[in-house]
Image (cartoon, rainbow, N blue to C red):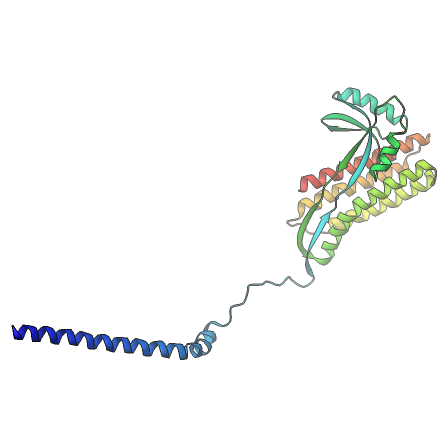
Length: 273
């Protein structure tokens, strides 16, 4: 019995000593790591792996990254006739053109016949209130909304796209304002026709600039801008070159042109959204 007890006692004491030694070694390691961890990191890890920097690929020389926007365009139109019949609307459009109105048929639910367009709601309402009893005038807003693009390209190409986006709507509003000045007699037909010749030349130059932009991810934007400016150039030249026997026909073409330009711009923006 004594031998058994003595053996058990000795075995338990040996394990206790080993456990104490292990704990002392662990404590010494923790102290060593705490003191030398910074030294190891600075002199071993960093020289091997270096500092981690964010990945950044610089643009090639001459390139730029920017946002370009087709701005919102609002035109308040005077609608003189509305019907669910396209035939009736076409007949009304012809009568309105004979009086100098645009006679533009626009489908928004019903077929609406637009006579003219204005920069402000107040101007549109003022003209609507002057209409006789033959029509029931109403004001309808043609609004394009706007759309923006992030582009990375050559600086000159970005400038061409930016100019094309901003110029179209601005020129269109100038045309509408000019139409009102023509109606009031503040400018003459010959002067307006010369302005349209200059506009045709400007539109052609814009087409040439857009055609120089290389193909890429902005193909759809370039395609729609080219369509807008090519159509505008064609109509500007037609208005300049046409021999108008009656001033009222000239007024009708001017108004039809800017309404058509507005609708085309609206469609371009909405299809790019």
